[in-house]
Image (cartoon, rainbow, N blue to C red):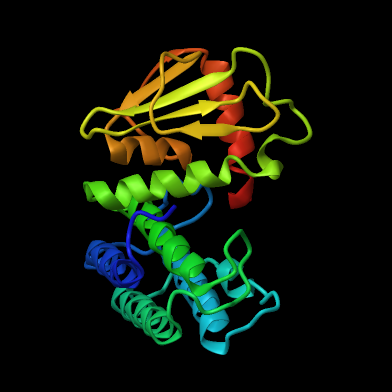
Length: 255
């Protein structure tokens, strides 16, 4: 279930992009991005711009067949890029994507690489793709990063929904088993999730009792943890090995 409306999503894509662009003013595009090993800031920006362009092409053309994601992976290393040019291109691309989404509407059937099959998928996915890469850029330039509560909650909800798909729990190493439960609890909002891995498939509950591993912290930090980013505000109590395994298996969709 999405927690934000369609109009909020395509507006948030532009907003998150503009916040990221603010980090680029005076920044060194060759600065390393610690949370994306091997990438520099310029490569991160090109990757995000490519993701926006990929989604925009799918939505604009109303494609119901897979569209190659080459622009997403086109991140050659450069040493002479102008941050202002990178920023302008990123902003233009986000605007084009938001415009394509607006014209399509949330229920327009299009190809999606995950469950959904409508433009709504792309609106939500690109909102959170942009937000997490803003976190990467903030880390690269030493800026603070924070998400509004409703955006962070929706991003967590999206991740957790994907964590219940068969790709996350079928095969090896085995994820499901007796006593395997995880609880995520926000310390700055009335929000918690119980991930029950004891049955034939993962089940999510909005609240729950104590679990084998308890993970607590601010909403933004909980989200960063799920995405494999530094999350200094998170506290883990219990079966840390189970948490590591769950994070690895449930992150299949980012590979």
